[in-house]
Image (cartoon, rainbow, N blue to C red):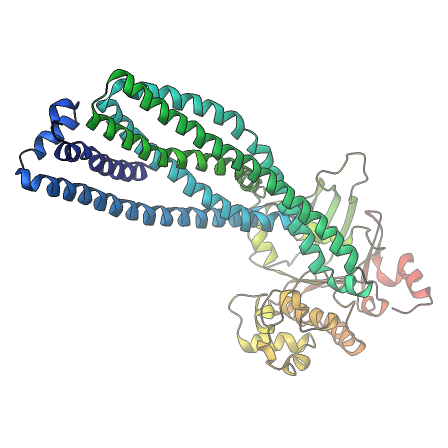
Length: 571
């Protein structure tokens, strides 16, 4: 900021010098006008130019004015380039800081945060912040110019300067009251922007359902309502701003006229009055810049508050630092574990309540129960994504909260219906499971997951681009097999299949069942599935109902599993 102020001062001094040279220019043009009739510093400038020969004086003064303006233009160009780089760097740093904070945020934050709101912060919000930085620097530079011009005006005629100062204070008082309205309007624009983005994002995600149920008209109406709300809030901001700026210009013009009348009344010399008026006229440009930038800053306050909100998101609580040098080679125990989602009424039943069970090393465990019973929540607890509200989880005798979460997850491979593929090729998706994996390792994992055959039949094979979530190229079953290959690539100690076979065909499911029985690429497995054929590969079962563990033991001895077997519909 000091550099910006110094550059602004340099430009304004050069412009002030050029304007000050109008006094000797007028003295050369007007017979009888002399430097002595002008106050300092104009008298000094006039006296210096009078050393030139009369025939050269006019051209010399004009050349000096031109040189001062050229130097001022060079400083302004340098200032613009400097500010552009600084604003760009600030925008980059803020985006990086936001993304770092997003990655560090506790997992429950993502369970409640609106994706469209987050995307809007990264796009519109950071762009507006960059513009706000530009506006702030513009205010600093313009303020430096006003200070220099003010000093020159004071030196030329202090009485006129006092009148200008009083007038500007009145204008600022009027402006402050009207600018205050822009803050709430800006927040409304930001909220409407996020809602509009959310509506568009929801429609894109649900386009298949929209087409199948012929809901295009309904979605169009809903989008148009959000779009109109966005339009109305933007118009309200623009109306407030546009009504204010013309009124400020009228007030500044009135001030200019008042100066003329006062100058006439006190008998200000013509050269001094000319220089004063030109300086005052030129001062309207930085004044207008300050006023406009203040209005635009106020209009951007909503976006800035959104950025502050995300930066204030608490990072995940510090966890343990213990490593697992031998992997997950001990039984996993849940001891009276309960979990309640954040921001849920205390009277509401916890998602998990007083769950106690053990997962032996080398076992293939079926986690079964009705939909919404809490099975996936147990997996999130086991993976350290969320922490128990009460109770504890242990690996052998080591509490899970003492283990480095990154070290823990490096020994876990997860494939599930809610674990999306990334926007990349098949190769990149499988390689996502382990950094530094070779092509042979990736293809081996694909073969074990029964994915190699269909992958090689794709036009580009392993380099076939899948698009977001893989939906553009693959069927549901194919996506699940690629996700399974990704999980198997790291040879996890603990393999977790969360409805990972819900869309695969019979031959692929039999391959996965053979994998579960062989334990060829993992040590222990947890399987969540509603398909009896998949569960048949498991030897231990844990039944979860309404957030509670109701049964645990050998799978075929469980009442819940026997009821599944007795059901007439095969799954």
